[in-house]
Image 1 (cartoon, helix red, strand yellow):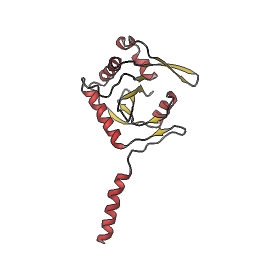
Image 2: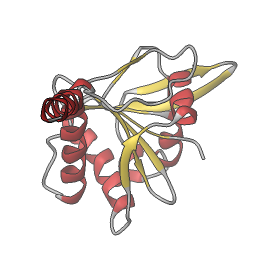
Image 3: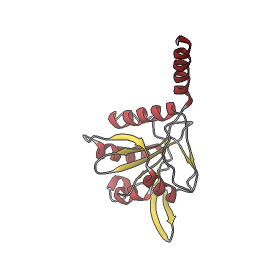
Image 4: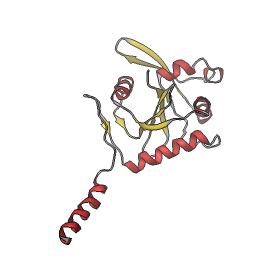
Length: 178
């Protein structure tokens, strides 16, 4: 009996190391590459710290693509409207949507500051995307999806953040349509 208990506990212990990432439902046709759970958790912490600490810009780099749903709201904000260059178009079926791609860290900080302002005092969770959100993101981008890909989910908005796994820098910021 002791030998059986030992084998069972050993199996449970090593099985817990077997799954390195949280599996989600991937829509048919979407190319989705998982990364290690530790990278996703580190990214969540980095996002939380970058939201709560107004002097923390560790997540940011000079290039940030602001997707069409979020840019549709942000483009009317004076400080963001003045960002020069980087006007981007997205072709989705027969529709052309506009977005923005920052060209330097200072412009990226302006976009992030606006996100911080929208999140200030609000509760949120950071989670992986669901099927509907993945379908939207896949329809906008022209590359395979690599984790970490996360949502900051509030009652009002669902912000999509795609972070580069090697550098842990934010490369894409958008909002999932409601």
